[in-house]
Amino acid sequence: MSIRTLDDLLAEGVSGRRVLVRADLNVPLDKQTGAITDDGRIRAVLPTLGALVEAGAKVVVCSHLGRPKGAPDPQFSLGPVAGRLGELLGAPVHFATDTVGDSARSTVAGLADGQVALLENLRFNAGETSKDEAERGAFADQLAAFGDAYVDDAFGAVHRKHASVFDVPARLPHVAGRLVLREVEVLSKLTADPERPYVVVLGGSKVSDKLAVIEALLPTVDRLLIGGGMCFTFLKAQGLEVGSSLLEKDMVETCRNLLERSGGKIMLPVDVVVADAFAPDAAHDTVRVDGIPSHRLGLDVGPETVAGFSAALSQAKTIFWNGPMGVFEMPAFAAGTRGIAEAITKADAFSVVGGGDSAAAVRALGLDESSFGHISTGGGASLEYLEGKTLPGIAALEN
Ligand code: 3PG
Ligand code: MG
View (cartoon, rainbow, N blue to C red):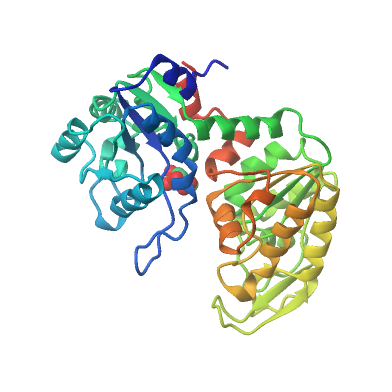
C-alpha cells in the first residue's frame, strides 16, 4: 500500500500553499436547539489542522453534515461547527456561506498563511453524492480549484464514493491525514493478526445493517456477542417470542442460518429489560428471554446478560465494539451499554470502539475515553473496513 502522508507533504513545505482538507465534521446536533452534542469528530481532526497551520499553509476545510438533499438547508449548516472549530484551534475560522460559490471563492482568496477557512456543507450541492461521474467530476473540479494539495482526514466518510472523497484526490497531489492514518493502522491490526481471544460485540437496531460484517467476522472471531435492537431477530430465529420488540421479519431465516453456521461463537442475551412503551418513563421490568410478554418491548439487555458478556470480554486479548446494547439515551435503558463498556475498559485487551453512536455513548455515559485502545470516528467506514471491502476514499489515496 503506497499512501503518501501528511508528513510527506509537510516535508515538501506548505507555507503559503493552499491545502484542501476533507474532514468528517458530521457531528450530532440537538434536535431542539441545534447545538453540537458531541464534538469528538471536530477534536479528532485537530492534529492534522494544527500541523498545517503551524507550517503556514492556507487551510481550506470541507465536510458534509447530515443528509441534506443536494440543496442548501439551514438546519444542516456547518456554521456552528466553524465556531466550535475556531474555539478548539484557538484562532478564528473563516466560514464561507456557500461551498463553491462567491463566498467560498472570496474566503479562500482572502486567507493569509496559517489561516483556516471552512466551506459550507458539501451536500448542499447535488454533485457531491451524485452517482453520475460527470456531475460528480464537475463539482470536484470546482472544489479542487481551492487547493494546491489535498489531505483526506475524513475517516468517517472514506466508504463513500463522493466527489470530495473520491474525485478530488484524482485532481490534486493527495495525502492521508493523521486521523485517517491512525484509523487504518488500528483497524488493520484487527484484520491482519488479532491477538486471541478476539471478541466482537455488536449492537444497534438492525441486523440488515450488520449482516455483511457478521458474515465477514464469523470465521475470524472467537466470540461474537450480540445485543441491541437486533438481538430480537436472532432470538426469534431461536424460536422465542419477542413481544413488540424491534423485529426484522425478513431477516429471521438469515439469522437462523447464521446461528447454525456459527459453531457456537454467537452469544445472545439471556435476559432483557422490557417496557410498556418506547419512552423514558415507561414502566419496565427485567425478564428472561423466554418470557417476553406479547404486549411489551425490549429496550436493553439485562444484568445476567451483562455478566455473561463481561465474562467473555474479560478473557479477550482483542475487542471490537460497535453499537449500543440498548436505548442508552434513556437512563432507564442505559445499564446494558454502560455495563458492556465498563467490561471492555476492564479487560486486559486491545479494544477498539467503532461507530459514531458507540463513541458518543462512551462520552455521554461519562466513561474515560483513554481506557479504550482506540475510539474510531467511523461507523459505516470501520465496519466496511473490517468486512474487507475496498473503501473508495482509501483507494483514491493509493493511486
Ligand atoms: C457518518 O456519520 O457515518 C459519516 O459521517 C458518513 O455519513 P453518511 O452515512 O451520511 O454518509
Ligand atoms: Mg453512516
